[in-house]
Length: 180
Length: 430
Image (tube, rainbow over all chains, first blue to last red; front, side, top):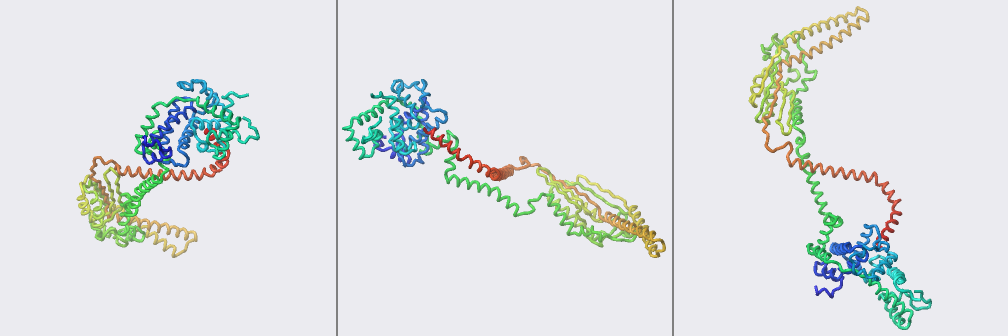
């Protein structure tokens, strides 16, 4: 597995396409936690987040033969994740991250979230407009570039930048002390 | 975050610079500007603080369950693609998009369908094309043979009016023996026109009938032999009725006309065809009928003659003449009728009626049902094929019937539907 450490995600996925098991294991190791975090921040229940993370990797396994390196692998993987979250929300018929729905059950068993700062952040995120919130989260938590966000959400890069700026400004007003 | 209008860089650019998303030359300019501009420094600090603050929204680590499931799926698959396919099948049954999305699968499916259609249709076509008689049932074949036999032997011709002989009234066939066998029966039967001989001498006229019920060991030979025997003895087949129901013994019922003189010989030959289960024979004396018929014929002819003479003199009134002519016409019709009856009577005396019922000695075959398994499967396949055909036709008919209105409503609903779908997608994605 060590030999893959220096390889890029895009190289690894192409090697996996040609049948390399190790390449997939390496990719899985790299993205296991980020993908779980992606779902966990967007869903109420940790168990469901794990299931969807699992489904996300299974979808990757299933569709690897159809993978084409048009955009970065990260865009592709988070594209799958976005799709799964959207499907989950449709199924649940509600907005999961919306602040109104942020009740105590979402915090169960989540030691890290028991700090006040985390709760405040989550609450503040819930007040953002949906697409702005998604762009901000993809940027801050998933560390996607503007181009990758544009590719995942299928919108122009300039739109991503302006919405990200709006989202940050709004969040800053809520979270940071306003200077006189 | 209002910016001074005269400021060289706006806040969004500062943000993009911090994200590393600013174009290189612009980034370099902003970097040097930041050193000197406290307002921009403050703004950059604000963005950095926000990012740090957001990182406080932490999540726990995933459990090992994710690891195990994904890696198990990876290992259980023979190839990366197969892993996905198996998983998809487990989740939703067949992945139809994969099945139908491949040309190879389509080609295989089409080839199988074509082979199935050919396998069903070709044997049928061959059966129809090769032996025409194979398609008919046993009874039809028998009837056909009977017709051919009757036509070739002049039977139909004999039945025509021209063939009915006119013989002298009041005379019983001269060559008739005591049993009626002495009549001219030596000519090959059935008699053609002019061959029916009227009895000339007085003697008993006997109509003979015989009935035989035979159990044939070799049914095929026996059934074929009956007609041959009839022809050999100068007789002919009047009616032949065969039954060959599946799972039952075959039966042949033949009504034959045999020259009276040949009757004994014919019956002796028929008895050899199998075991005679029942035999009956009867004689009916018809001399009285014949004599009576001839007497009435003679009387009618005399009346006819008198009427002709009467009309020849024409001394009466016109009404009487007309009356006489009507009477003459009636008498002549009567004479013709009696002549016909006389001819039939003579024929009945000359040709004995023999009823032969031939039964097959049938052995039930163990395990062979009414229809064999192969036939059942074939019938089911044909039925299935025709069902598919009917279904396809019904679908096409339905599409033609409903299609236009469907297209019409689709066209009307497409635009609002598209907008709703678009909104839904945007909501769902975000």
